[in-house]
Amino acid sequence: MSTQSTLLKQRRFLPYFVTQALGAFNDNVYKNVLLILVAFTAPGALGVSTDLFINLAAGLFILPFFLFSAFAGELADKYEKSRFIRVVKLVEIGIMSLAALAFLFESYLVLLFLLFLMGTQSAFFGPVKYALLPQTLKPEELVPGNALVETGTFLAILLGTIVAGMIANLPNAQLIAAMAIVAFAVMGYLSARAIPPANAGNPDLRIRFSLRQQMKTTLGIAKRDKVVLQSIMGISWFWFLGASYLTQFPNYAKLHLGGNEASVSFLLTLFSVGIAIGSLLCDKLSAHRIEPGIVPIGSLGLTVFGAHLLFSTPDVPPQTDTFLAFISEPSLWWVFADLVFIGIFGGIFIVPLYALMQSRSKEIERSQVIAANNIYNALFMVSSAILAIVLLGVVGLSIPVFFCILAGLNLLVALYAGKQVPLFALRFVIWFLSHSFYRVKHKNLANIPSEGGALLVCNHVSYVDALLLAGACPRPIRFVMDEDYYHLPVLNYFFRAAKVIPIKLTSGSIRCALKEIKKQLSDGEIVCIFPEGHLTPDGEMQPFKRGIGLILKQTPVPVVPMALQGLWGSYFSREGGRALLKLPCRFWSKVTVSAGNAVPPQDASCATLFEEVKQLRGNVR
Image (cartoon, rainbow, N blue to C red; front, side, top):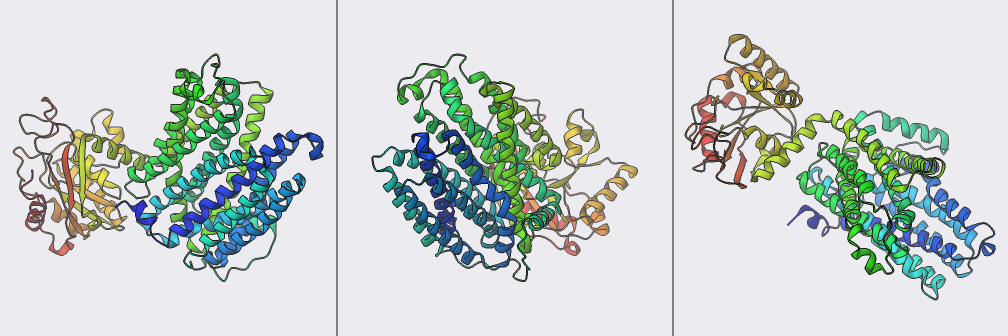
């Protein structure tokens, strides 16, 4: 059973998941019903122009995130979180009850003010929503939990938009909308009542309401940890892109794709479903752990498919009279595929960032960090609107060109992200490549210490042994490698990025390598050596060399025996001839990476470790 399905069956997660999904759903039902009704209401009935009303609505919903997020973050850190959520959901019932009356009396300016209050309620819910996860989930559940939250949020937004359109087209739209928004608010409160208690992060926090000072303090807290701040900037950039795409969908569908209102909903569906798929896929690709290396991959995908929209958009909009004709139009299929993949890579991009931000934040100020994230998110979304106005309205660019410019800007983000986490990005690429060639199974990798220095020793079967170990281990590994291979052209760049330790059988080289190994182990890193010293010529293990003793004499750390099974006979082994100089005879074969119990340094002799690794390997070569 997957971690995700397990979480959805547990009280510590399911009520919270339902509560946040219902909140996102109800926000979009209310907001979109209001905007659709306004769009088809005579300007005289509003007292202001329709365009002004719609722009005011968009601004008033975002404004509370600037004004109140910092205050909300402090409250969420000070008080017990499940109770705080219930209070926020009760406020939602009150706001929606007033909105129901306003719908019945068609008081659109009152509904506009209540939209501001709904934005305020969402601003107070935001910090506690994400701060709750690290308190209720285990570390290995944080990524799958965030994947489910993003999936639920975007699907709720999609469903809320669709339901709003259905309600707005009914004869008694105002009455049905009034009943619906109150009913969904009550359902959200009832689900919140089932959320288990979650202790306050900082019950002694002193709060004094001051918008300017609280915002300054909150943003200052987020800047203390560089990784947290970078995660926040990455999340905010995602919302910048998302807002840019979603805002342009109506005109893009109408002007360039020959679509109608239903076509816009279809584009939103493709994008939202892509986000959901990408979020769940991210969890699987990262093996349920926080994997920063997947972020540049997600960003690169956003660039590729965002730029491709320029080329997949038809030069002349096709004539499609019906929705079925629209989705059946062959010239639009690449556009549909691009939007799905933009969503998929967006999900891959965003989930690790949320998990990283939550895990790196201190518990006593985690809600305030998330409040800072919400402030930056709002700022970036407003900036996206300004950029669109300038490029589309003032400069006069087309929407496909605008999408291509966004992809170019995102390329800079991808390069920056790759530069910040080169080792993690390289690790993820290694994992992906190794799991593409082999069906890799992991056994007892929890025996590798989660922190502190440790030495891994493993049998040496093929030239991809290090790749398989690097992709399997939950922590980065510093490998010891023959110096001749280390200096190979092109590959040397990757070896240096992975902080490989070169060694050669000369006294000077051995001395330098031992010094570097000591430094890495003392710094709490994982170092791996292949004590046989070379690839096995016959599939059987060769005697271990005495380097283990020299390492442990300098730096006594736990030694974890590792074993690789199933690689003998592969293209990268020496079976049937020299490795890499023979025809491949099998593909996607089964390989097992096993870890034994850690051996204390005082008991870790060459003979003992040889027997440990041999027993782990068994009869499978």
